[in-house]
Image (tube, protein in one colour):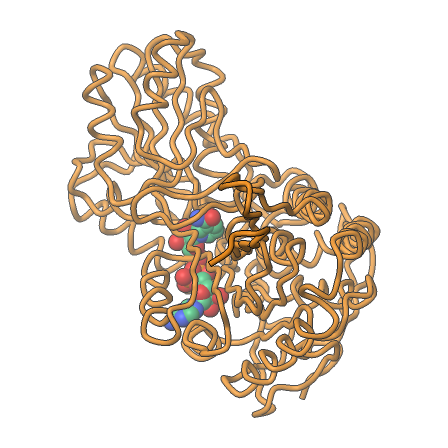
Amino acid sequence: MATIFTHEFNTPVYKGKTSFNTGLYINGKFVEGSDKTTIDVTNPATGKVIAKIAEATAKDVDIAVTAAHKAFETTWGLNAGGAERSRLLLKLALLMEEHQQELAAIEALDNGKTFTWAMDLDTTFAIDTIRYYAGWADKIHGQVQETDEKKLSYTRHEPIGVVGQIIPWNFPLLMMSWKLGPALATGNCVVLKPSEFTPLTAIRMCELIDRAGFPAGTVNLVTGYGNTVGAAISSHMKIDKVAFTGSTLVGRKIMEAAAKSNLKDITLELGGKSPNIIFNDADLEQAVNWAAHGIYWNHGQACSAGSRIFVQSGIYDEFLEKFTEKSRSLKVGDPFDVDSYQGPQVSKNQYDRIMDYIQSGKDQGATVHLGGDRNGTEGYYINPTIFTNTTPDMKIVQEEIFGPVGVVIKFEDEDDVIRQANDTVFGLAAAVFSQNINRALNTAHRLKAGTAWVNCVNQLHANVPFGGFKQSGIGRELGEYALHNYTAVKSVQVNLGHVM
Ligand code: NAD
């Protein structure tokens, strides 16, 4: 039965209480799932169950889709003007701001990321994103095409309709805002599924969406498992588009389900194995600091994580020494401790998966230069880990580990490193460190990646597009580009006197 989740935070960084309904949010109401079953939500810092939330099924997806269609035809879609959509999104951003500490605390509790990062990045960026798309809502314009004097031709960028959105556990609130912002700004109705591992901020957000005054059915939340609810969304005949962020493996399934059902439009934001290239002429201290941020940020659970660190031979030894020192200095610990940089991995599954990769690195002959082991006895903490002496065919070099595990690889020259960096099925992001502007930009241009950072890593902004080349995805999120994912272009041709 859907109940109220209440939690009292009495931590050094945040004191406060949260309390919210744990039901599905469908047609403007919190309800139980049709089967009245629940999902256990675990605190990764302790491994203990902290909440039970309603579990949706395919039947609930049907109910949510019906509600979304009704809203689209009556109160949202082309029935709500841009100014109104903007007003509601701005109101939502304000409510998120009002509850920012609470949202950050829930995120830290549910996901294991530190409260400090959840405040400074996740919640701040989520609010920025909603506000950014509020700004776009009344600026969705088509074009006029010149044909001949007896015709008027123009385009309308109409909302697609009901869109399904499936998000992962690594940035739960942030991914929700990346999805909701452009979808709502352009007038679509949404059926969203958060990860079964981290559903709490999404549920809390629905209360804020409700308070902001979005019409019932505009946003619907179906908390459930991937192979039931996720599969029902991606194969639904009345969902017109699906936007997915998650693994490449599941992205493939989504694409297949879309093709086999109603050929729905898709955008996919998938995995990565991002190269981070450090030339002899880089500012070494800065390169070390950014490289550490690149791989250990969010405990390595970032799609853009700079997990392959290529260092030119002239500075390799010095870099490795300083990078090791930096890695050792990062405090792994309680997400609510102000000194913690890295909290626990999100789940037992993820912890086991990372430890299996570490074992495979050892088995395939790589050297564990640092870490490679568990931190503490409770929860899912893993120490920052560096591998050296790798070969290109090793699993730890080719596959996305999604944990605090980096490989440091020596290279000789530009051609050599670009060949190695591009030797991957992924193409999400890449970084290059050099004080020589020509070298830095030439390298950035030759890397096959949707984002190339120069002398920094993991920089994301609401107005800068983000997405992958190759098997890292299809389409772009954020910025003006994301609006194209959520509009259908209609050409209207008017006869001004062409007589047949
Ligand atoms: P995942 O693919 O296992 O799950 C993502 C979502 O898909 C979850 O909500 C899950 O329940 C759902 N799902 C699982 N099976 C499904 C199915 N058969 N049909 C439909 N939905 C299904 O990924 P994850 O472990 O939650 O997240 C980690 C992955 O996400 C990593 O690979 C990471 O690189 C990727 N990611 C990418 C980006 C990006 O912008 N490119 C951002 C964040 C995470």
